[in-house]
Image (cartoon, rainbow, N blue to C red; front, side, top):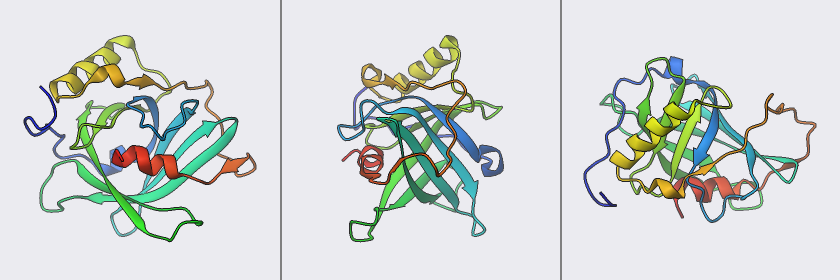
Length: 188
């Protein structure tokens, strides 16, 4: 099943209060712009007062913390599908233009401990977990699910995760470019 085939199946009735918090990237289909040496990649979600979700994406590349922040909101507030739009503001040395991409929760276990995230072009794919590692059996199940949704999982790249994970303290060297996050999220 290739691109352009049937609509992907998404989670219904996602409980945002349970979904928020930190997720570690176990694997992803990296884009051309994503640093190949990016490690300890993770996303942290928090509920905003207006019902949107604050998004903080972090990775460590060349020993430096790189991050970008944005907000996510339901693509269609009138249904219970876990299809979100994520809006990032391009970092300071660009004109401040919001860039929006898709974030579809394709699978989520009942305990909200691991998730499969995709988007409608089937270009980008993420396997996320509440812990820095998941069992091979679970990983393989998520790969099968991605294949069923029409993804080419041979492009999936495992993300190295340190144990314990690094701190996000602001004292660490920071590279604020953030452009690779935008490029990878939107498959451009």
